Image 1 (cartoon, helix red, strand yellow):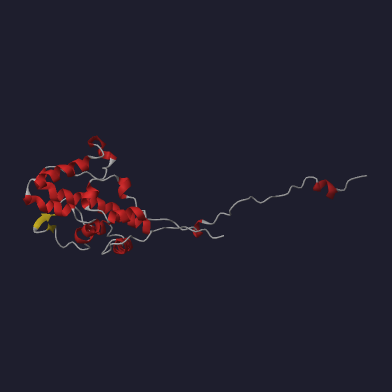
Image 2 (cartoon, helix red, strand yellow):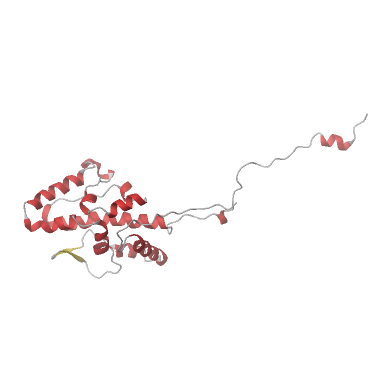
Length: 217
């Protein structure tokens, strides 16, 4: 029996299967994680502030001890997990100054700042005229943020520890961060907003900040 043309064609038909797995969305439907997101803004502020803490401490000890603190390890500065921020907020300046330094200065040893702190305390203990230095070291993280760092306008280039007047030299308050981003006013607003939400006048944990990108099915 002779096969017709249709039956011959059917022998060579293949079934097309759809690929398994999640259907990819167009790039236009995908949220881009950028520097304006809460977590990135908070990281910028915290990294900048901890840099400021080292700098203002150096401004304070500059003319009295001939020693200087080194930058804190960046992994500590960039950590914005809620428990870490809460711990920082309850920390005194002396707690922060004794943290491990940046690996960039590893020739000094990671405990270098702790050694400098102990050296300064020994000098302060022997000279009651330097007690104001201890007063600063005993201050709280949030207290320094509010009193010395968070300055939106460039009003003066000095600060006081008790009745001791000290010039901002190494330390760059918050307005320097704003000026650095003067070409991006929306980003400046984000810096101010996140600072006020997480640090200004607060003695409680900063709300957990997440940036979540959800896919639509």
